[in-house]
Amino acid sequence: ATVRQQAHTGSLPPDPVVRELVAEAHSRYSDHSQGAIADYIPILAKADPAWFGVSLVAVDGRTYDMGDTEIAFSIQSISKAFVFALVAEALGHEQIRERVGVNNTGLPFNSVIAIELNDGSPFNSMVNAGALATTALMPGETCVEKWEAIRTGLSRFAGRALELDGDVYRSEARSNFRNRAIALLLQSYGRLDHDPLAIVDVYTRQCSLSVTATDLAVMGATLADGGVNPVTGERVVSEDVARDTLALLASTGLYENSGAWLFEIGMPAKSGVSGGIVAIAPGKGAVGTFSAPLDPAGNSIRGQRACAYLSRTLGLNLF
Ligand code: DON
Image (cartoon, rainbow, N blue to C red; front, side, top):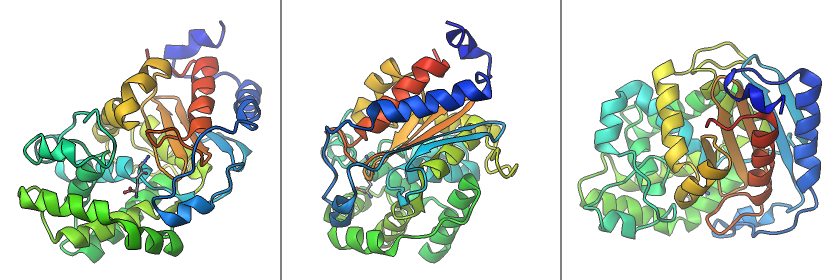
């Protein structure tokens, strides 16, 4: 009850309490064995199902790590949240709303039907169609410039220079037929600037950036902190953009499961198919988790459970 009362005060409980709860969020679900590791990007199937890391970073920069928080994995769809923030920072709220959209599709992340049924709308920056449209809006004349702006921008969120995982990039680049089809379909509707296949390449690179659970927590904590990275002290995006990003994540971050997630956990979040989740408590901090086995919508099962536990015990639910 003491912890629950802190839900809207903007502060986390004292240090030892947070440390113990993060440790408990990890140990409770360590033995869990449900879920399937993604294999449509062949190299992802090599992940060890036992890897499990939980990290929490507070808006004052305090960091709590438990388990495999140093194992690097490709960021995948979680990149979409931060590329959205960079584009919103460069172009503004209205442009994103008009040119990409901000509503949930209610369909899987790589749905083609969603585009077809809605006159070529890419829908929102968190599904693949909208993410491709958003990457195309990144500042930079050429795709080389766009990619560089994404890599450096996401690095500022993480507070360290993020690197491309070349093996993941090549594995996805050889197998991403569906994303190429989506990009060409968007082009046919006049909804994608630039060469569609070159944009798919930039998008594939952004998804192949290598991160840890701790990196995800720092990136999320930057949004929780109104756009300032709490570890480096650098402002990465404006307060308005941080708020817009969290609003979008609340409604679309876990794809067609976003409503159920918000109902149970009450935190804006983003998942990726390699097993990462970042969940944000505005004004307080963020949780980053990594565990490869996924539910049918493509969301890490252990990660969801660990976030639910921390939301409940630390009073992170927004509502
Ligand atoms: O485009 C893809 O399919 C992957 N690069 C990313 C998908 C993803 O992470 C979906 N998340 N749950």
